[in-house]
Length: 140
Image 1 (tube, rainbow, N blue to C red):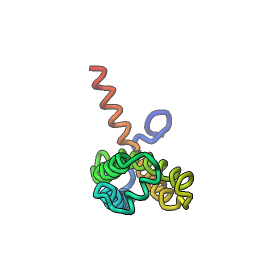
Image 2: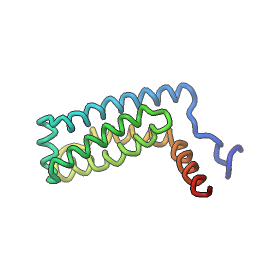
Image 3: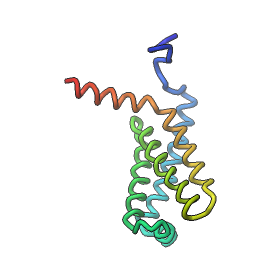
Image 4: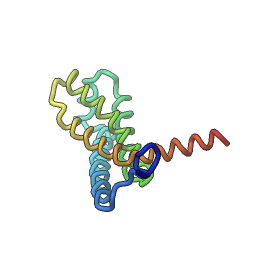
C-alpha cells in the first residue's frame, strides 16, 4: 500500500474524472456568478427574498459578494476546493432559511450543497497543500 498509514499518496482524480469535475466547477461558477450578481445588482426578487430574513440589505451584499468570490475560486485550479467550501457554508444557511423562514422546499440549495461537497471532496488535496505551506512557514 502506498502513502502514509495505508492511504493513497495522492487523491488526484484521473483525467476523465478531472475533466468532469472541471465541467461541474464551471457550471457552479456560472450559477453563483449569476446568483451573486443578481444580489449585488439589487434585483427586486433578491431584495425581497433577503429582506424576509430580517438581517437588512447588508446581508444581501455580503451573500452576493461571497457567491461571486466562490465562483471565482471555482475557476482557479489550485483554489477550486475553497470555492466549494464557501458554497457549502452558504448553502447550509440557504437550506436553513428555506426550512425555517421561507417555509419552502430546500431542494435547490440541497442540490447545490451536494454538488459543492463533490468538489470539496475531490479537491481535498488542495487543503493539505495550503495547510502544509502554512505549517512550513511557521516552522521557518
